[in-house]
Length: 218
Image (cartoon, rainbow, N blue to C red; front, side, top):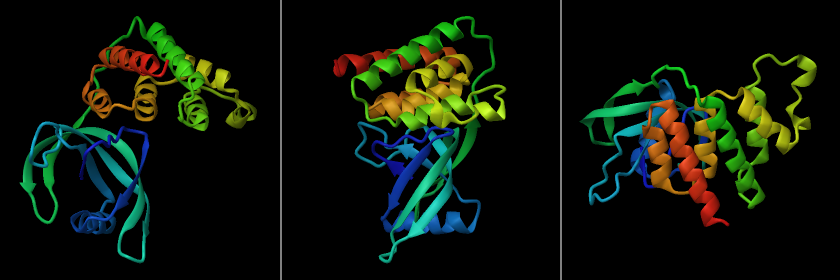
């Protein structure tokens, strides 16, 4: 599926309204099979409807068919994919693809970079960002390495505590993807965050983009 401004990150949820006949057919086929399909941002500067090279592969978690044949659904991001050759165009576009994974390496500056991101997230919240605080709390809880059952009630976390836990315990990729999905308002910047594989480069890019968000909303 090609959309003008949508980005599907791993471990995030994307609500969609499916109304075009071609995508309704695509969804029906997906629901009868593995419930998977990809979301790619439309390539800018092209008169034709072409997808960006990197897209998000997602699984349909919830699909509700409306009386008029349209659908409301929730797509859960699974992984980044690199689109290859198109194998068909009708009734909907289909591509060969490869799963993309981030190279594993030590990050000496990980803690410092994570702290910078958390501080920028805190500033955006103070500026009145519409991001759900509950999302941050969920991330902080999921990121806990070894939490006792009695300590797992994340509903009691303050925003400040959630941010601190994010900096200490969150997996960098999980943190980057969630913050990029919820706080970056410029579609091209979200697409960049989807395409960059090196974790250190992605952390630095996110810091730069969040700094821009803070400046625009100052």
